[in-house]
Image (cartoon, rainbow, N blue to C red; front, top):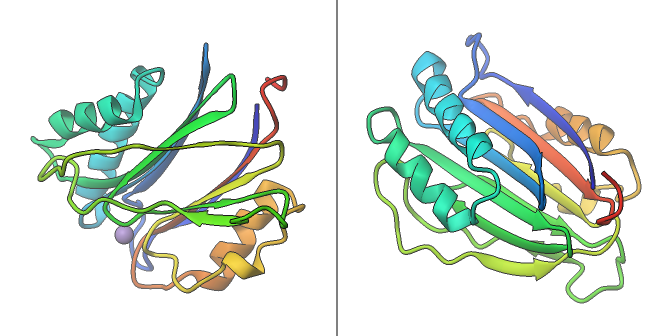
Length: 198
Ligand SMILES: [Mn+2]
């Protein structure tokens, strides 16, 4: 259903990263998420890991219910910012972001209008303060690309993306050229292959 690649680096001087991702297929679709745990080092990594394990466990849930579950689990830990997208077997995607994990949708058809969309993020911190949540919905087409990037990735890379390249290559290139160097950084690139591909 998807082809994906990830590139990540901890902040220079740190061994562990507070950024994490997950790609999880379930019966009726696939769930994608990128999490940035607040702060740095072990505490941030623990928060991100906690969020990812909740998302994995309940992957089939709605994106709003998933954020609420993460919120409850992170109240005892550091908070996190999270963007996630759930794609079902009919190519319907719900996406939702709290905080500042960028999420971009690049249409395979560059003539589509719009050919790129940026997920409008909610303010707040999961585990600390949640706003009222509204998932956005759209329909995917074969070979559309989703790109998630944490705030350790800087600048506008959207126009540099070669949409036909393998997902891993796109992720590596974005991180190589846009790593800020003052924070953990993670880029997740996912290509939607259509409902028939498992
Ligand atoms: Mn960060």
